[in-house]
Image 1 (tube, rainbow, N blue to C red):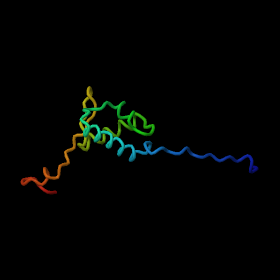
Image 2 (image 1 turned 60 degrees about the horizontal axis):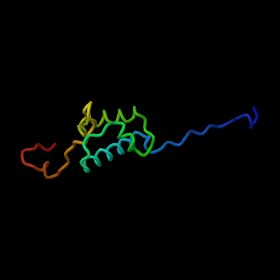
Image 3 (image 1 turned 135 degrees about the vertical axis):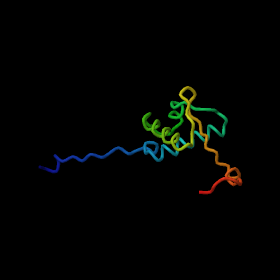
Image 4 (image 1 turned 60 degrees about the vertical axis):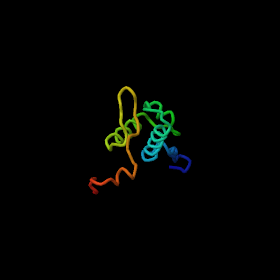
Amino acid sequence: MTAAAVTTRTLPRRRPAETPRAALREVERILRGALANDEGPLKLPEVRRRMTGNASPALIRSIIDELVRTGRITESPTKGVMWTLYENPRFWRKKGLIRL
């Protein structure tokens, strides 16, 4: 086999939104921003449109499912998804709450 017959193949570079962790952080940023701007629930195509990279609908669906499972967002089949995690430190310092 000659050197000219051997070809190497390079993999395409991944965009930041195509990695699951970066996409998760980006979806979180989008939903928190929508909450801060009082935009209400966002549909999944709108979340995908606001993302910087080309994320697949399956990746966005799995991210939404994970955020729903952990209690950070709420999803409605008709209205969309909305960030609902309440993070006010004064609320969590109330007496009567059990510290883990």
